[in-house]
Length: 344
Image (cartoon, rainbow, N blue to C red; front, side, top):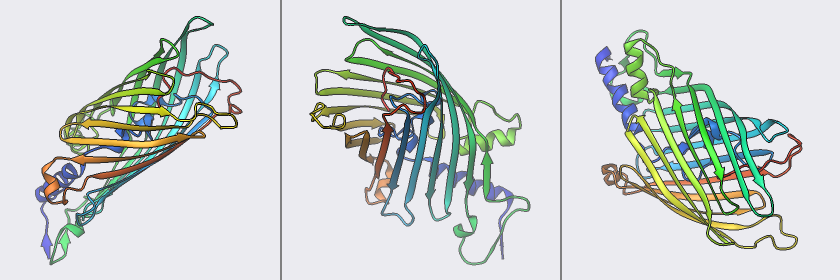
């Protein structure tokens, strides 16, 4: 019977978790924008409608022994709307990942709330301006497991006494954002979020949190909607994450949205098609495409990595698909909202 020492055990866990976290693209930051509240809690409820529901699926490294599978679902809604246009929103995000011969499994269940303050609105026959300041808070439950028995061959393995294969963490994060519509054809949003800002003072736990990606992180994000014509809109976006297990990460690119039917008679809303191209540091390219119709948005994406791992994965990247639905009714809040830069 093979016995694993405490030091060997620690090395195995750290190496495997580090490898598993070295992914080309975290679906939380996917340009398909299926779980915006995981980019910044202040984005909870930042949309025009009464409820938003979305889901995303990703399959990566299909040619390796055990590919990585990611999927997530989210919903949010405004729950209280004031007379002056300010409102309180709440949401829930569920994300799961499974990868590797060791059955590395990550699960995140996160609840978020955000308060959106209507700073100023001017809407007359000549001018349109609207500004909104949002503050969000997010917390929940994260469960990470690794089956070490599958990583050894031959004789059974004895693990160190008192050590298991699961790590549980309760994150606490916050964020702030500002959105402004300078006209009916241009609006933008900018935000910054602080993740895992409550940390243990214990040195061992702090190192574990760093290895697992639970250390303090800051995520800055910005995006815009620029309608250059009645049909074509540019939608640039930048997300920058500091402090992750992969170091600083940057995602930048643009989505082109083209309106097809322009509210034809009897049509339920505008139908549009979109396509985008993105760069994700340090060595990834992402392309996206899809259609928006009758309050649904369907998107697909391919994330291609130039990393050395491609030699063992037969140069396969990651395939993503997402579905989002926004209910246009306002039965819950009783008030119609006009959110500046409703990008998600």
